[in-house]
Structures are given as structure tokens and as C-alpha cells.
Amino acid sequence: MDMRRGTPSAKLFGHLLSLVRSLGTRGSMRQVGESIGAPAATVSQVEKGQRALKAPKIALWAAALEVSEADLHELWVLCQGLVPVGRDQPVFYSDRPDALGSDLLDADIIETLQDRPDLEAIYRLAVRITAVLRRLLPDASIRVEPDEFDPSYTPHMDEAGAWVISPDAQMKLEADFAAFVPLPGIWIYWGDTQARGRKLEFDSREGVRMPLLQIPTPIVRRRGKSVNTVELEDLIRELSGPERERVRGYVEAIVEQRATPDD
Image (cartoon, rainbow, N blue to C red):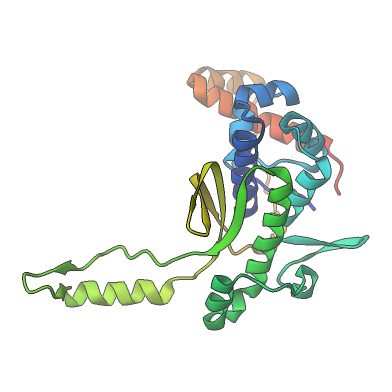
């Protein structure tokens, strides 16, 4: 069980991790980097999903973010589509939907699932992730909401008040709607609150759209062309400052991965 950089899982976890940092301790990337013994660029890469956080590093990140290591580890596992089942190995959410429970879902989710029952597992996974986020961000309001169709083209109204759209635009609009998948979004609300009627509203929010997670395929590594030390030094000299920092991050990730035993 290990997260890979650049995958939907790494991007999802990285985005949520950035929210835990910015809304929880409110520490900067530099401050977190100092706590975990890494440059701010490494923190940025992890939060963007460009670099995958490995299991042995979770304790350091939890300490830096001042959150529970167990909760952060559970979030890391769930973002890979894996669901802990007792003392057994985690199972993939779509293989064992029953592991996600059968609690009653919110009304808007139930309405969405009436047309797309195939999405129930990913919605229940989002609900499970939300439960962990509530422990990591106790001062925020967090809920799962179905994604809404956002058309790329909006018809205009003529002088008579009728909507006008060309046949080509109508066809594209219908095709976009047919291809639309109402995936769950995890919305985090925070800041000052105002009571409007019976509803409590926050002044800030940010959403994370859940991807349809897939079981990762095995990595097939091919041996690349090697270069000698002199050629490598020449290549590094030609890089700009930011490029050198990225290369440094990649090298650190490789060294870290080789030093980490397989789970």
C-alpha cells in the first residue's frame, strides 16, 4: 500500500492536506517544511500531488500540522480508495462497498443516486473522508454535495424574452450534459457565521471534487540511458534555479522511496 505521485489519489490527498495546513495550524509551507526537515518546495509538491507522501513520513506531518497521526493516516488510506476493515488489509472501496457502511445519506445525495446508483460507493467514500476531515478541522463545517452541471455555453435571450441557441451549440450542450458525471464534492466552510432563517452560513468555503479512483496498476520500470558524473554536472549547470529545486525534490523522493521498506 503506497501512494504514487501525480495520481488522482495523490492530488486529492495533497489538496486536503493543504486545507488542513491553511485552515488548521495556518502555518506556511516554510514552517511545515522546517518541522518535517524538508524545504518548502517539498511541501508544495506534496500538496499539489506532484510528490506522494509515504507512510513513514505521516507521523512527521501530523506533528507539524498538530493533528492526530491516526486520523491523518486514515485520510491517507481513504484517499487511495482503500477502506480499513478491522485488523485485515484495507479493501478497495468499489470491491467492497459494504465496508463503507449503510448510514442514511443526505437528501440531495439520495436524489442524485436515484439516477446514478452506480456512484453510491464513491459517495460513501467521500462521506467517510469527510468524517475524518471533521476530526482534523473541528472548527470548520464540512459536507458532501453532488457536483452540478456547469454548461460551457449559455443561451442568450432575444428581445421577445425567448432563449436563443444555435443548433450546433444545442448539440454540444446536450453532449456535454450526457457526458456529465455528478461526482461528489467535499465542501469545507469556515470563517465568521451568520444566521439566516434556520440556516447558518459561513463567509468562506472551498471544495474538493472527488475523482473516480481506480486500483493502481503495477509499475513497469524500464532502464533508461545512464550518464557519467561529468555529463550530469553539465546538465545540472544548464538548469535554472527553480528547475534545480525540482530536480532536487525528485532525487530526494527516489532516495526516500528506496530507503523505505515495502508495506
